[in-house]
Image (cartoon, rainbow, N blue to C red; front, side):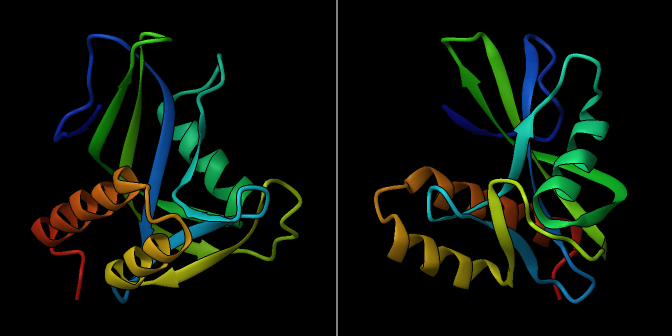
Length: 149
């Protein structure tokens, strides 16, 4: 179940991380998954030897060729009964886009605002209310942080 958070959950292992990078001008960055044909947050599992920070940095580079600012704000979590683990979503500041070949599961990125991202998701996968909720929670937190213009 999706839950808005301020602090990282500490009662179970965090096995997956997602992020929504925000640019200097207040736009958000999402990735296009070429296999699933979906607009998605930048995400992946935390490898055994990795920290949350390392996993976020690796996924941002692997999926969209982006480096992230050091400030990372958790805003939502999902508890998975089957694995007894959490997935956590973070707001992050986009630092820099680097030349990238998109050899993994993502074929590119979309820089947009929250409302347009929601409209695209509604058009492509109208039944995915969780992804819309994630964007709503992220936008609310970004406003609180004064990260949006």
